[in-house]
Every structure is written in structure tokens, then in C-alpha cells.
Image 1 (cartoon, rainbow, N blue to C red):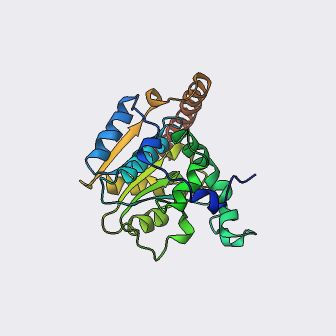
Image 2: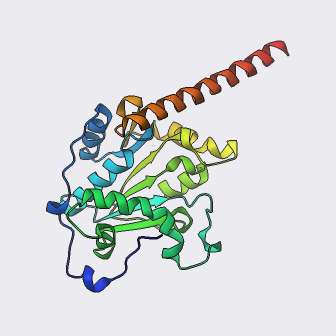
Length: 252
């Protein structure tokens, strides 16, 4: 069920402020690096293990900056692929209804960031300090004066990543969050897009790339144990596949 609320009469009576934002302190070394890089006005690529708080801390930092009015940017824009249905135009319902399944996680995240505020996600949209944008809608748009968070970026092929970064306009910053080990892309050529993209931006002085590892997982002990076990199995399979290919080449 969608949590979308549209009672603007109630929303007019309230407003998100910096004081209503829960104060977050980084608890792992790479979270500390992210806080520091953001303060240095860096563009960011946060990649690595699930459960490390990449999206959470980026939205926190972006909302805090916008609400403090100490940065040039006046809005937070969350960009995300609509996988498995990239072109949501084929789905029934309004644009808001089509996107509700993808915006649901952000309702929960905003509830956690603003624990004493009712419906903070919709309030942020009403105040025009937050926008959710599917990748299908970004072509031809220039995002100015915005803090752009590209979430689940491992589900974007190279063309989509290339399109997004060329939409970053004046006085805007961008942060990519994702884990290429969790991609929903099926074609291997598309799965390589995030690797190709990272290979380019690692040579850009304006970007900081921060690799979140198993030590950065902040979710429950069970989740951490599972992610570690899964990653080791996946990596083992990757190395075994490489070894088989190398053996075949030697025998050829």
C-alpha cells in the first residue's frame, strides 16, 4: 500500500526545520570520510556493502545542508532507476502512483530522520526542498542549485550514468550510492556500466570515491552475518569462474 499523502491543508500548518532533524553521528571510518568529504564540497561515489548506511547518511547530510541554508543548493533531488520497468509510462495510474513503490523506502527513511514530525517526506516535497526523479524523466533536464543523490546506481547502465552526470547544472553537487554486487541488471554488458563509470570518475579531482566494506555494516547482527556470507560466496564464484577461463586459455 502506498504511503502517499496529499492533504495540503494539514501540510501548510507545518514546516521542516533544522531543529526537527535528528542529529546523526558517523559511527564507522568510512562514514566519517563521507561526512568530511561532503563538508569539502566534493562530489561523491559511495559504493560497497549493503547495510552500511550509504543512502541514509547522504540524505541526512543533504537535508541538513539545505535546512541550514549554509550551502548554495536549495533542494535535494533523489534520482533512481525504475527497474524492472524503466519506462514507467507503460504502468497504469498517475505518475505519483507509478513511483510509489520506489518512493516507499524514503518515507521510512524520512520518518527516522524526523522522528517528531508527521509525514516529513511529503512536507519536504511541499516545501519544495525535495524531489524524487526517475531516470526516465531526466533527459533534457538541467538540475541547478541541487544536491543530487543517485540511489541504487548499480542498476543503471553506462548510458544512464553518463546522462545523469551531464545533467548536473550550476551550483549542484552529485552523490552516487550503490553496490555493484547487488545489481538487478540482467545483461552482462549493462552490469559493467557502473565499473566503467567508476573507472572514469576516479581520475576526477572533484570526486571522492569511498569504498564501504563489511566492517561498515551497521544493521543487525543477522543481517551483517548474512551479507558477509553472501559476499564471500559470490566472490568465491567469481574467482572460480576466472580460474576456469584462464585454464581454458592455457589449454587452447
